[in-house]
Image (tube, rainbow, N blue to C red; front, side, top):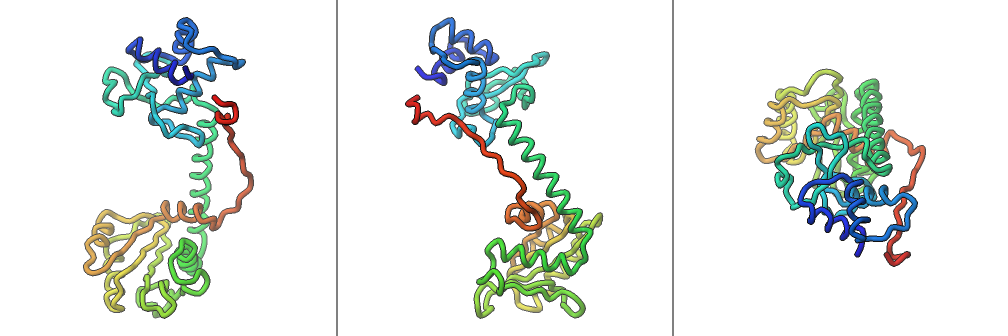
Length: 273
């Protein structure tokens, strides 16, 4: 019997959520599994959380067997069998634990916090730059993301006086038969209103365009998003400051890798576990 099978048996027998310590005690009492680890309680906790619905970190298992729950007045999380629906345990309030997290979970959570910090720093740097830089940035980003027939030759920045409402163009093929038109607005506290979307639509109509991307370092009003969605005969994608910084990080633009940490788990095939 494996550790997972032992945990499942204990939870089935009791028919209610248990703490990882209680699960371990019942495994020992029933002699379901013989532990050789120095800290077997931590082993049980680790196996449960790796297979827990709603708990995801790099070394977590894609196979979810358990669910973490907390009842009112209960300081430590309890675990039960996951039946595929969170509502199967209506009497308990489901919460995310912090004290009971595995080191891998803590690292993953701190990594996500780090990424959010970097994205905020990127946005501050963008808003401190001049509009011309912002126009170059978004054209380069689209090329980096794979749009255009060539990463260095397919994009063109045309913003400035007389740009006719278009700040950049991506040629999808070498002859320029298919184009993506770009508008870039570097706003700090102002949201993009629907009037600017309509102006972009008008500029695209004049050029017979049917693909457009509107970038903003701030956000779009709901009316602006509706205007883009209802554009006739064309597809307009809106990218706000938050999504822009997400793409910048994903494509390694404006950021430099400082350190890399590797996470390990036991190779069960190596030990024939």
